[in-house]
Image 1: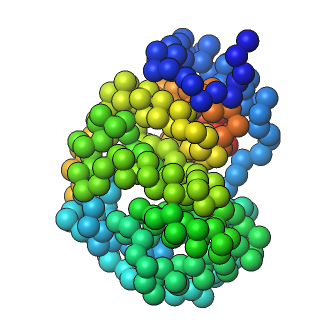
Image 2: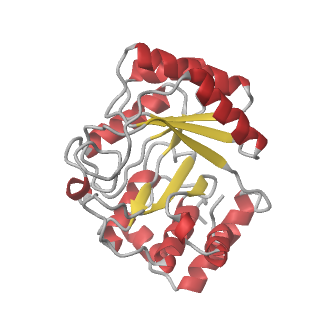
Image 3: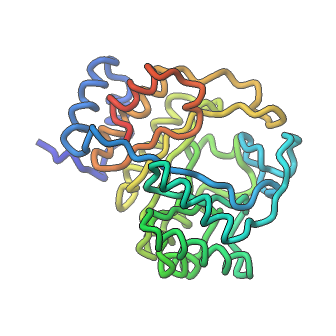
Length: 285
């Protein structure tokens, strides 16, 4: 019998898992979830936008892109004491991971990056898992963040390589994979997932999962996001993501990556408590 932890899944095998009868899929995912994870524990993460809006990218789902009129107010990089105050409150509220996001295309070696380094040090000293999502990153920049105590770096693939250009044209899929490689080389854990509801096909979802599961190491964390339809973005009129599609994605991700933290991320506020309970039963952490 093949090991549960594999990096050699084929597209055909993933397709077979994804399209298996729903209750069979849920049972298989729930069984692996119980085998490799503490199902009585849910990790709570807090995400803070430390620099908001004005981004030069054209990600079709994102309200922070400068080219879309979404009503987002542009804010410069926050002050360190303000960020650390948010982190303290998050910890008191039960969060064990604190993620700082900046609406940048890429990290630049300047005073703003130096300030982020100090924020990472500060949150790390609180005993929380520190995560950042700052755009593209060089190997040297990843090393500096690692030395400051960064635990995880979030950089999502969003969708399949084939559908990617329909959603983003200002950077390539290979750019994303290179950043993930740079993060790995620095010894930082990888947080990488995708978004469903962008107009992609089931095949695109399967191909995205195939890319994740055939990386040299599975990401330690895989966020499964449902598109949040924001007025002013090109995808504002996309249909709401079907709950069964979300269940299938989480269950398939759990089966492919049994030890990974599968995260129920964007879109959950539009889902009922009963729906969210199903997600945690079939594999979300």
